[in-house]
Image (cartoon, rainbow, N blue to C red; front, side, top):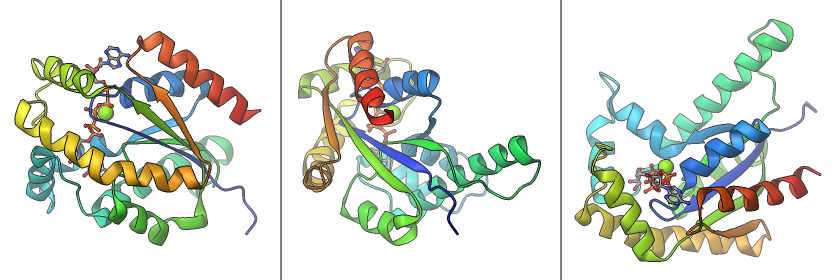
Length: 210
Ligand code: UP5
Ligand code: MG
């Protein structure tokens, strides 16, 4: 069929780079649907009876990456739910409408994620941009440890932080390089204030959306 494909913006960056903060501001201003892979995994982990609870908990604590079958399924379900609620509003049916602008926060983080995405989703959506938020390492650490005082997140502690940084550098940055070759990447210095970073995001999105 020739329905328009959903548009996807991947949002990457080290732990505490500000992905969630900036996605929520973008979503308010431009209407994108914000899906955080990490939030979806934490929610699945806390779902009673989930067969993946322990596996997810272990990966999050160790800063390693959950197998793509799990993450991709959660992301695809969330995208579909969204298209169905849109369909209900627009034409009163449950038949998904294949339009929408999605911000996918914190995915794809390694080669397994990228391969799985190509296999399960592939050309059904259009990846139009990859936003990459970057800070010096000490900023990542300071933000996450500060948040750790009240977040209750199992990975906002010094040991997990080291592993998250290592995974980011060795597994996620190669994915950024892959998308750079496709000319899809915009890198943003996110060590500045939330407002300054947001303003740069707005410029990028305005030029993308024309
Ligand atoms: N803050 C934000 N912006 C600021 C600014 N400009 N100035 C000062 N402070 C700023 O922000 C982090 C903290 O910094 C907050 O307190 C905020 O107020 C402040 P946030 O917006 O939450 O940053 P974010 O980049 O979203 O940080 P997050 O900790 O969520 O990043 P991670 O990438 O580490 O976490 P995520 O939830 O994406 O993943 C967690 C784990 O899940 C992974 O390590 C992995 O084990 C697993 N995972 C997978 O396996 N697969 C996936 O696809 C996704 C996750
Ligand atoms: Mg986040």
